[in-house]
Length: 229
Image 1: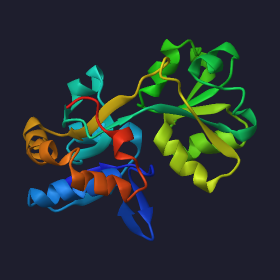
Image 2: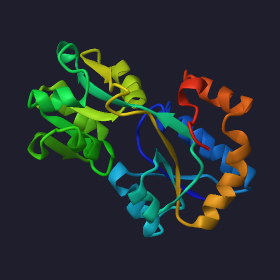
Image 3: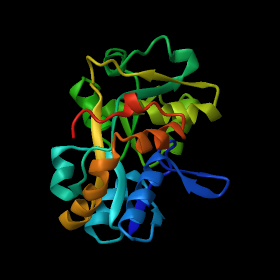
Image 4: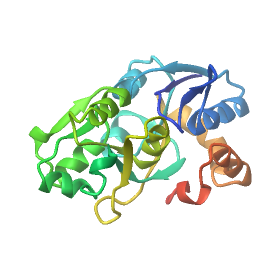
C-alpha cells in the first residue's frame, strides 16, 4: 500500500538516508501484518487529503480528527494524542505564552496550509491579516528564525524535534486552557482500508510493543497515549 508522509520529526523523517519516524514505523508494522508492501510517497501537508481523494496514495500519515476531515477520508482509531506548541525565537519566548498573546500584541503568526492550528488561531482572536499560510515547515521555521514572523503554530512535539538543529529557536507549549490535547489517526482512501488497518491497530496501540516503538524515538508513551479509542 502507498503511504503518504511529510518531513516532520519525530513522526516522519530521513535518518542516514533511511525513512523512519514513529508514524512511519507504525505504518510499516501494520502493512507488514496485513501482508502489504510499504510504499512511501513524500508530499506536503496541504496535499495529504487531496492525494487520498485523487487515488495517489492509500494511507496518509497521522493527522488530527476533525469533522471536516472525516467528510473527506476514513480515519483509523486514534494513534496518538498531541498538544499544540508555538515555535518562537528564544529572545521572544518570555513574551509569548499562547495564541492569545499573539492576538493581544498584534504579532504575526505562521501556520501550514490545511493544518487545524489556522482555525484555532482565528478562534482565539488572532486577526486574519496577522496569519501567514505557508506550505512547509522549513518555510515557517525560517520565517520565525529570520524575525519576519513572530511564531509558528503547529504540534509541540514536532517543534521540539526541530529546534535541536537551531539553537536560536524555542518551543512554547500552548496552555491547556487555550487548546487541550487532541487525538489523530491515519487517513485512509476507503472505509475498507481503514477497517483493515484497525484490525491491527486496535490490539497494537497502547500495547507493550507499541510503547517500545515510541520509546525508540525518545517519546513518552503516557504523554502520547490516545485519550479516546
